[in-house]
Length: 563
Image 1 (cartoon, one colour):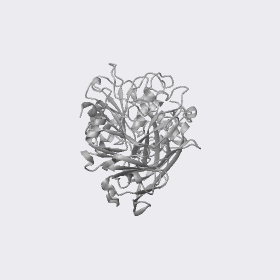
Image 2 (tube, rainbow, N blue to C red; image 1 turned 135 degrees about the vertical axis):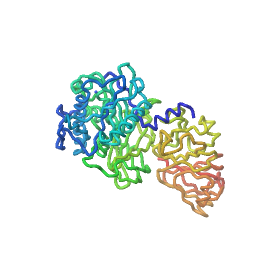
Image 3 (cartoon, helix red, strand yellow; image 1 turned 60 degrees about the horizontal axis):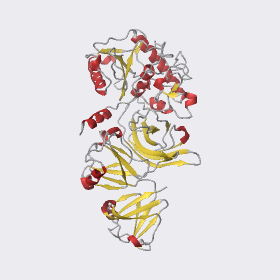
Image 4 (tube, rainbow, N blue to C red; image 1 turned 60 degrees about the vertical axis):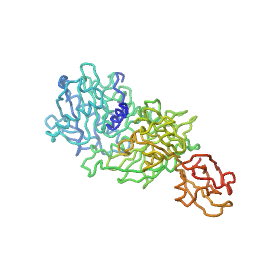
């Protein structure tokens, strides 16, 4: 593999939230947040704030040549208590009252407890990179092994470094359940209303990532009332005079299940979550101007919520900061939601990445990805193509493959090198992809009905694709095939999908033996005179009792739902 792909893969596996580096232009002030930051009726400790059974680890990591900033314990304690008040208010506003972020108490000062760790390297050894972040985490883990009593949780760490004095960058991002920020004398409650930097808001934005929150942007209807979503661009509005910042309902749903929000220890917290999802409908209701999405799922854990994120693809290096989201509860093993299209910021002719996140009661989250596009302001969810990408995060070449089959040689002719696919984009409805690790569709395929920005990890299929089948999938309906004209002889009913010669035979249809077809509404059938959807073809848009021009010629079949 080339070095670029290796670097991208390492970054993906590190689960780094690709936030912009803090700039010097702006940060919070929700209309419900008072300067006193009370925590409503929740019980408080001797410091006047809430501690839970498990609390956030706040770690102040000091490079060997860059000392701690004066007054850091007092300043950061005040800011974190302030942020706890903001969270408490937002949880209540969104209907998730009674829980808030747990902060550890330093019983000697009655302030928030901060763990100070001396780094082994100078500041230049800890630049803005996941490599440096992981090196810091390794040093923290070494310290933890000899000071376990200082840590409350094994999962969530807020790691703060003094701002570099040599002008260099430093980690300022989320990395899994670890998050990084910086400290300087202006990281304080006093400076927050008028600061021109985004460092304070950036600290809380990255802490959101460390608390399991993905990026999401305010809906169009929310912006005039609530302001800016903290997990969108709220790092530049948080705490600023005249600016409003808020947590979305989806953020609060996730936090409600977070380990640090539980008054008592929850057995099985963040236990393994395995889900499968099938979208049963995705369409635009012109009468209500709403997007309608429904589906079914299986899960090894009880699900609490389903979250829906809509990310407009604004550039080849697209980030998801601008993703409005919705949330609701499942009903049994199904979900259904109707969302006003006017709450999205980008319509026109815009491509979208759609992410469905399934939130378990134990706090773990499973994600499924899809793609769709707006065409002249109307969302088009169905598709008949897939796109394979060279690198993770949809980087490198992006090659679109219509319905059909593709050997190694055919992929190469289209620009897809052998064993070189790292990502795949699949539309919300209409397509299933079979990825094979051998040429000519040999071996056990990886079946994809959702997008994947990296085929590493649990997929185990990064840089393994040697042949591909793209076939219709979902939407309902079927086609009945007959051995003789006038619907005589055997009758075999097949649902939407692709069927090779062997698969037709397995269903009871002999090769070159179809004479008639009875189609249910909204079904299109394409017959091919060669295996694997090759050779000459014949399209049926309606039932045909005697396919005279293609009688006894079909060796493979595509059945698609057309709406």
